[in-house]
Length: 252
Image (cartoon, rainbow, N blue to C red):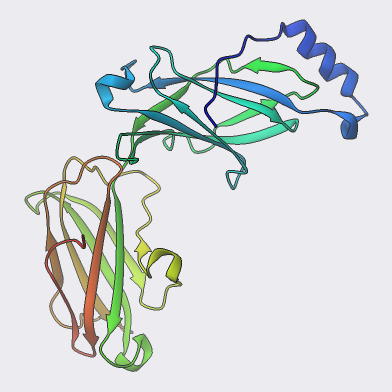
């Protein structure tokens, strides 16, 4: 549903609604919230190629809104939301639907819905900055499994283009939980948002045994930087007790 701009209800009405609800939490009706959005250093949607804003309220994104990004002062409107305090996440998507900007640099951002029909305008705009790239890896065995091959983990090292400056170094258990919903890819954690999609260009994946000893040579992948918010999907195949192989380039 596309969001529209709403006029704020005067603060005195919002305060009255809050006072009237004290001790009667079950009777508090839903409310609305207007969230202003800033793109980078006050850039326009057109400058950054952003066509839509996607916003979520709640720890699991229970309430979602989509708004076009075609205004000099973009904003998201949530309507008829139960009163409460919610986590807020906003992403800016390009014409391909890729979230190239997001509010992930402030993962603990919270907003409050007062309820009782009050419409509140968030005082502090949500800042969207460049989203990191995402590295996904999967592996498969010709025969057997991690246990039968004696393979315990993969050390995944991510470098900028040129292969000198390292961005991330993570060791992932071979038997880490993966499922069909992601085609059995595992997403490399990047809580610090280090994976710069404008510079990343090489990845090395080294299989390890239970003692942390290398199993065969590392599997290398090289590619042009995909850009902010893009996925980099890698497949290791033919894994055995002597290591794994790969195509050398990301999956399509």
